[in-house]
Each structure stands twice: as C-alpha cells, then as structure tokens.
Image 1 (cartoon, rainbow, N blue to C red):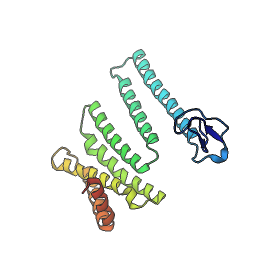
Image 2 (image 1 turned 45 degrees about the vertical axis):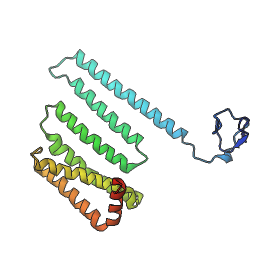
Image 3 (image 1 turned 90 degrees about the horizontal axis):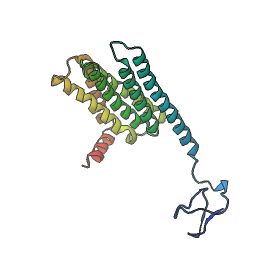
Image 4 (image 1 turned 180 degrees about the vertical axis):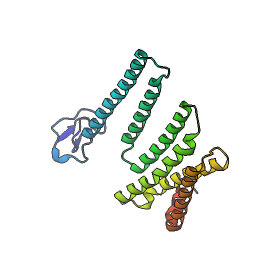
Length: 221
C-alpha cells in the first residue's frame, strides 16, 4: 500500500502523488485498491486522434493553398476549401469533447451548423439561403435526433425537457423572421415553425408538470 510520509496517511487508490499535499508516495500500489475506473487510456486515444485529425486538416489547408498558387485560376478556391476544413474541424472537435452529454452535443452542433450556414451564405455573396433553407432544415433534423437519443438511452423527462424547449424556441424564432420579412421563402420556415409549436404544445399538454418545473428552474421563478 502507498503511504505519504508528510501527511501520515495511507492511499488505497493507486496514485503518483498524495491527494493532500501532492508529495511523492512511498510503497507499491495495490491493484485491488483501484476505486475509480482508469480513464487515462481513453483520454490518450482521444488526444492522439485529435492531434492526427488536426494535422490532417492543417495539411489539407496548406496543400490547397500550394496547389492554388501553382495552378492559378480566376477563383481563389483554396480559401473556400480552407474554410470548409475549418468548419469540419470545429464540428468534429465539439462532437468529441461534448460526447458525454449527447443531448447537449446535439444542440451545440445545431447552433454551429446554423452559424456555418450563415457564414457560407455571406462568403458566397449572401443570397439568404441560410435563413430560408439552412437554419430551418437544421432545426427540423434536431427533433428526430433528440427523440432517438431519448428512446435509446431511456432518459426521463428531467434530462431532455430543456433541450426540446430550446429547439422549439429556435424553430418558433424562424416564424418571427418570416413574419417580419427577414425571410422570403416561407415553406421550410413554416414547416419548422409549425413542428416547433406542435412539439412545444405537446410537451405542455402531456408533460406539463415536468415542462413548467423545468421552466421554473431555468428562469428562477
């Protein structure tokens, strides 16, 4: 068993340092004393993957610029390809580092995808497709993804309620954009807003207690 001479304590869980003074421990660790699962291997694999993935993304950006400079064309396509690589890197990084909470991960990806749609809309001369198609379709896709996660993991309403509410509010916001004239193409926006309103009403009717409890907690009412 490991022992800290300074703190005069025995450490059952194998460790390199004393949990109190961070000093060096004496003795040999006992495998039977392992209190928590060893996550070191998992973290090292994920870290290695992200380093390799980051290197490949940087390599793609550098190669794109190199090829574009060696074979010049009227359109500087390397800038667009680099922006696409950066977007993929951001989405992948968030998906990996937020993997412990799949519901929150889904909402993060939704927000990022909506932002990426707007970014690419501006990069390509802004024709409004991000607000008319990109964002409404992204929000619509989130609902079945959330439902699938909830069903597979058998999650109680307290875990998923706030994520449904936030997604519904985002969908209803698209209707406001259409009413105020910010969006011209109404079909995707109306579908997104209608689905959001119906799901929100369904939550209130069938799970009213959980719904209002979640609203009360988040608004401190």
